Image (cartoon, rainbow, N blue to C red; front, side):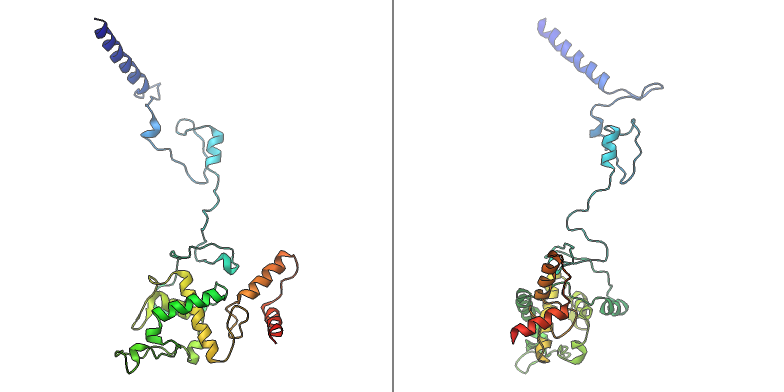
Length: 269
């Protein structure tokens, strides 16, 4: 008998708990649920503060904190912008990840990219040129040649046949071309050349462009390295950025690129 009473009492207890924890809404009752947050997620509207105690969890102060604007996640960049801390832009990026590119594979957007993508976001360093050389020889030299003269293995007499002549990157048209012409081509390809967006990361593409620029500079007997750049005004040697950062830290006017290059030339003589 005791066992029967115990079982009956236990079942009665469970029934009372169930009835008290889950009640249907009535005319004068809002009803109740057992662990309602497990059945109905709490909806928060960003940057919206409208406290209503019947459909919000927590206090009014807690809701106010939850609806405040948050700091961007590390690595977040504004739409249409990208950069590198090492390049002095202060914007983070993922070296081996995907970076947004807002130009379509059309002739119109190719022209826009050539006109708008001007400055190389990475400084010229010894390391970047070495990486660029390795990547260029692996991905590009077979067609464009190790000297970038368009005489790669595929078009030499001892190589295979190629239906068209690869571009001679040492020609004046390519020497004077903007960085955007190279970057857009690396993304989508050009004519029979395929795109390399899936083979080269964001930083690697710029490393290759830097190395091509160094070959072009050498063909014109100009300098293009981590110390000095007499080839163009769009790519900045690392030494110039380092001097400018040091001057900024010291709270004195930062020297111009031209002034740093002149001092570098003096020190080399």
